[in-house]
Image (cartoon, rainbow, N blue to C red; front, side):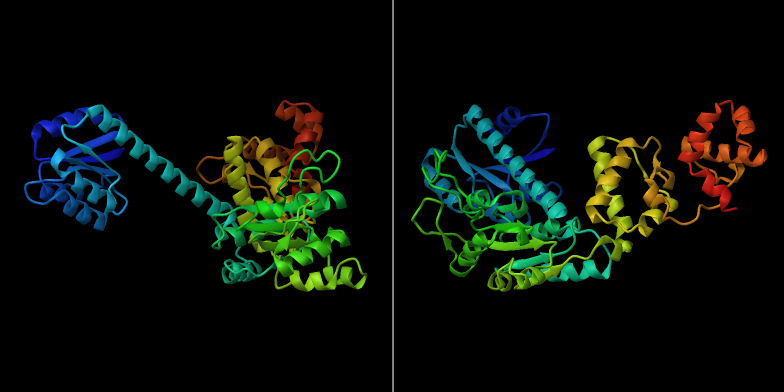
Length: 459
C-alpha cells in the first residue's frame, strides 16, 4: 500500500485532492497544519507528501526538512499561490520533486503523483534486482563452510575493488566463474558490465575478433564495425575462461594490452583505451604450459598477480549438504515441484562420492532428481548406482509400527511394507509378490528401486 500525505489549511483543497488521488493501492492521509503532519508521520511513513508552501504554523520548506530527517526517501510536491512561485522554485532546489500553482488542476496533480509513485516502484525493482545479483553472484552466492571456501571469501574481500589481475585455478566444474562474478559484484565495478569469454570455444581468427572487434572492411563479410569484448567491458570486468587455450599470437596481443591498456580493432589504426579489470581462469597447469613453450612466461606473470585456487568438491565434502540443498531450492522453484530434502542415506552417499565433475556434476544431478522424483524426499535409492555404491551400508529397515507418529510419504510406506513382507517369507519373492498382490517382475523392480537387497545383506 502506497501512503500519501496531503497538507493544506484549506479543507476544500484537502477534500478535492484526496478524491482525485484515491486508488485501490493507496492510503491517503490529510493534515491541516505542519505540526499535525509531523504527528501523522510518527505513525505512518508516506512515500509522497503534497504540501502547501504556506501553513498556519510551519512553512512547507520547514516541514520537508523535518520529515526528511527521519524519512530521507520521501518525495515532495509543493502547492503554491501565483505570487509565491519563486518560493516553490527554491523548494525544488532543496530537493522537492515538483510544484503546482493554485487553484490546483486535479488532472495534472494526479498525473504528477502517478509518475512519482511509478518511479519509486521502478527504483524498488532495481534495489530488488541488485539484491538478487548479490545473492547469486556476490559473496553470498558462494556456498560453503569449509576452511577452503572461507579462505576464498577472505581473498575476494581483500581484492574485490583492486585493479590487479586475478588468476583463478581449479578443476573443471569447481565454480571458477562464480568466483569471478563474486569478485566483480563485490567491488566498485559492480555497476558496470561483467563480460565473459571462453577462450577454448573459438578458433584463432575468431577469438581475436571477439576480443578486439573489427572495423568495416577488415575482412570479407565485415560489413560494419563490431565492438569487441574489451570495449564491451569498459569500466567493468572481462573474464577469460580457459585462458591456457589462447593461441600464442593472441597471447602477445593480450600481453600488450595488459602493459599499455590500449589496443586497435582488426583493420583499424586508432588506438582505443579502456578501463577493464581482467580476471582469467584455467583448469590447466600454466607452469607446465610455460615449460613446454605453449604459454608465454611474461603473460603468465602478468596474469598471476593475485591467485585464487578453487579446490575440487571431493576435498570439501562438508560443503556438499549446503550446495545440494541450495540447488534443490533453486530447481524446485524453477520447476514448481515440492521436494522437501534429502534422507540421511542419500546425503551420506553424496558425501562419500568423489564427484569428478565437481559442483557442475552435483548441480546437474540435483536438477535431474528434482524433475524426476515423485515423493517429497530424495533417498539413496534415487541416486545413480555409482554414487549409491559408495554410500554407507544400508541401515536396518524399521517395521511400519516403529515409525514415529507424523506424516510420511507413500514411497517410504511402500518400501517398509515390501521389506516387512519379504522378512515374513524369509526372502521368498514369489510368495511375497502373491501376498502383496503384484507381479513378480513388478516386485523385482521395486526391490531394485528401494535397494532392499542391500538392506537384507546388511542384517
